[in-house]
Amino acid sequence: MGITVGMKGGAETLCEREDTAREVGSGDLLVYATPCMAALMEGAACDAVAEGLAEGQTTVGTALDIEHISATPVGLEVRAEAEVTAVEGKVVTFAVRAFDEAGEIGRGTHTRVIVSSQKFLDKAYTKL
Image: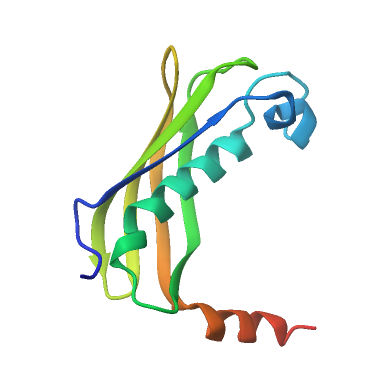
């Protein structure tokens, strides 16, 4: 099938104490941490392209440019959406957005590259 502009994906979670800035070390408040929002956005992007990947392929994140525009307290559901906006060879670009039950909490762009899972791991582990 391949990866095409317009493919969409999503991811969701419940904001729990371990997802807060205080707990992950990115701040000192008990609100949803930006690194957790970033990971959720990346998960949505993975979901968007999963069906377009060939056997043995995956994508790896290479860039993320996001704004975290609203705080989310512990106990609210959080969801992220991703849409493919460009495909240039093995480079896939996404528009990403995140929401809690009260509305939008983040937005931005994300870039992932299509790789062979085994070749990628082999290269990474040559560092040992």
